[in-house]
Length: 114
Image (cartoon, rainbow, N blue to C red):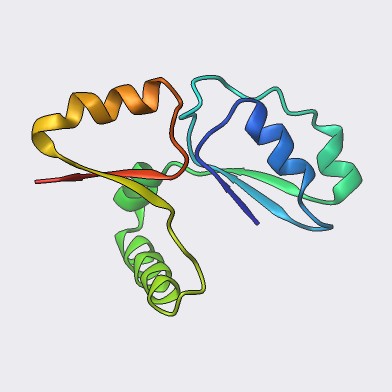
């Protein structure tokens, strides 16, 4: 399974990594462009692309989202998934954090502290 918040060229690359029957969850376009995914890949790999709008999902089925949140937190606590946090920035310097993201000079996440 691929959880893709980036879009653009990264989507095509990530979709190609799926095994037979894999799922690609498209959740955003942080990369700034929409993917030009070749749909024949879904047939060749027996895979699927699923569009996910978390805001609408939370409004339509809040219990499901709460369950997913709890499941993800449990995976994080058991270290089965990890988050790559590279920068922690105080709220007063949020413009600097935004510039780091715009410059694409980051690997990992930026956490804004209040």
